Length: 104
Image (cartoon, rainbow, N blue to C red; front, side):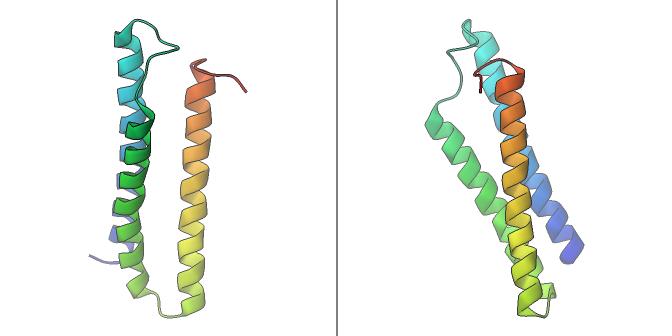
């Protein structure tokens, strides 16, 4: 595994787990009868986020072994953390507000 493939693994697992969580929540809401008050339990959401972060974090940390300078390693890690947070925040907002589950 090299630098690019470990970053691809990291982001693909992170995005996949988050999108699968949204899909399962949507399915539970549609099949539950009450779209606005049913859905996944909060513990499942937290477990999915922890799983996504830990799995992708492993690959991000693995990709850092190919970077030589500590400053670049730090920027690499911070950049991926910020981008991951922005991805989750934007897609969660679009999911919740887009389907009218909650309002801002």
